[in-house]
Image (cartoon, rainbow, N blue to C red):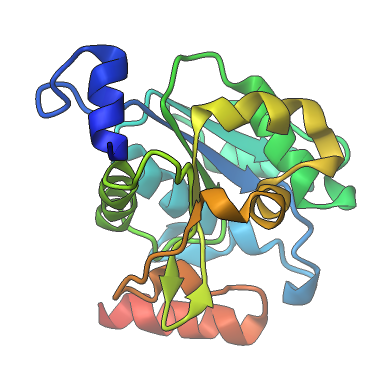
Length: 220
């Protein structure tokens, strides 16, 4: 039985009439040290802050809930998303690394979901169509594959998708459990499909990366 058939049986419904319930956790807590003095998530991309473009693309997926995890410059990040239908979760331990932010996002979820997407705030190139492609690939997986990690030309990318049943362990694990830990400790549950789009692997960590990003947006 594949993932789609499993969800049909579990929920007793036709997923063609009622889509799979998806939540999105957007990580926006990091210090972006490699970008220098600038907070990368606040840099303009096509006339709006990078984080706002990323979140708007995620909202196009119509998630049942979208949580933005803040940390460094939390007030500025929150202000950049003013007016968007999102929930905020603050990670006071953001300097300790990404797992704590993933846990904070998982703890903040309140709506029933079937699939959780953990997306990086600096992924403005990942479009709604790219996210839909990930979900479509996920629901077609065999039932023993509960984590999906996109790859492009053999390179691991983001966002990561995983079954909602993993959320309690992530929420309770704090700094000790995150997406990477799940992937490393449960390899038998991980699917690593290849995708044509390089948006999943496009990094924006340095001023040079940002210049490449802006040039790409301008020519798209």
